[in-house]
Length: 441
Image (spheres, rainbow, N blue to C red):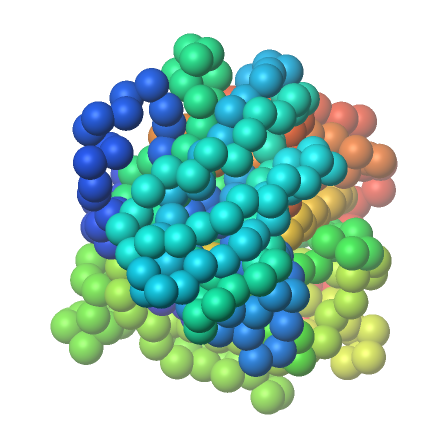
């Protein structure tokens, strides 16, 4: 994942900052004022191309669905109801030319209905009434026939508002549309059982098979000055990523005074290093590596003050095919004189086109090692969420314990809810890691 995007996401996620930048403006029409008994669910923040054949032209933009011409494409719109309900739906759409018309299929909970569309002005087309269970509702749109180039432009799915407004959740704030399509990020903030300075932070991470969707970042070792984990950048590329922020607050790394820049001490073979900017800046390092779902990876992080007003942060991952512990990088952060703090993990999706796909991570065998050399097991953590969840724009994110591990899960519009702020504990692991610190690369 691009470190610029990740930095912005981490700030909005871990520190729960409210996004203030406008991503775009929705279509405003007579319906937004006149028909207050219905909830217009904008496709801009709540829809995905869940099936998009090669060469298809459909896109979800700030105005909604555009370029809809492929009959094999499926557009899915999501919203959540907090109880079983009978819902009445309408579709706000228009066809490009008065001379053209189209027929589309709308499917909800296995029930399909066909509707005819025509006209150049946006209007609400009656779809019908559907019985839906509690939780997220998926509404599929698929083109069936058209006389012109496109089936339609669609701005909103309109939901009957005969039940209390609190009973429906969807992204209704334009400044959140981008973040809602990515899905809410979630975190485990670890309770470290000591007040002594911590020099090393160890933990293991497993992505279950089938939970490694493109756009996922599985962050194992979060700390106050940076983050360390694995990600799925594309169908062909995966990375191990380690970044450290500069103590100087700026979006442009070129603005950082020389004496406050994060500098590289050393790096592993074939590791890419550089700077990142935009919503913060610092030192970025990543190793292109085809890690696999179902395999458990071991992570190790070290902080060492250099006694000259800076701290060195070093990150290793254990790779069997590289002979054991593999150094990603060691960064020197100026104006910093401390050991490790702020222990956490998080899970996010950084691709807004992949937000309808779920992902999950197991976080196990967590330990810290103090400056005095004492290993201490970490067996308690607090589940937290980001601003997207807290603003009730989207709430498919949970955490807890599973099979002697903490877990985080998000995306895919599942309906289970875990209360943010919940604390989870499990039996502490019995055996501390065995690491030859003197021979780490």
